[in-house]
Image 1: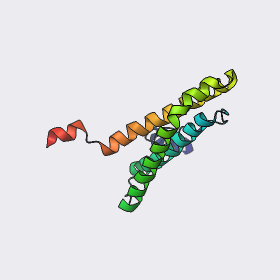
Image 2: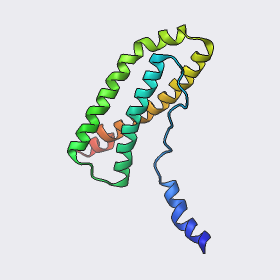
Image 3: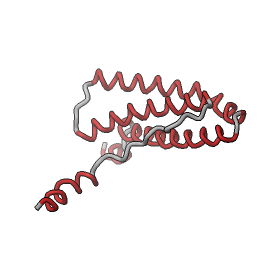
Image 4: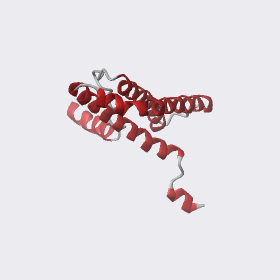
Length: 134
């Protein structure tokens, strides 16, 4: 009986869940600009992930909170743009081990930012199907 309950209620909920959350790197690379870029990327990712979670759960997000989230996300995106110019130079000047750690951390940040762009496009840009209906 317990197996039946688990199969009927738990398995479908697992398959319909949101994608697995990307975790930030465990250790910093000791390259200041790369670490700043990664931290800002995951700060932005966290905001987008929480918003996506609320929307998938069917929670109506009040307009004031939504505006605040968008404003803070925009600030995080701006801070990312400020960190980009020095990241490549700083990584090239670092030791081999720090370069490797920074590259791994940046790859994680890249995955988080890819999720952010895909999610934001889905919520804020009109779908082609919707445009065709009008």
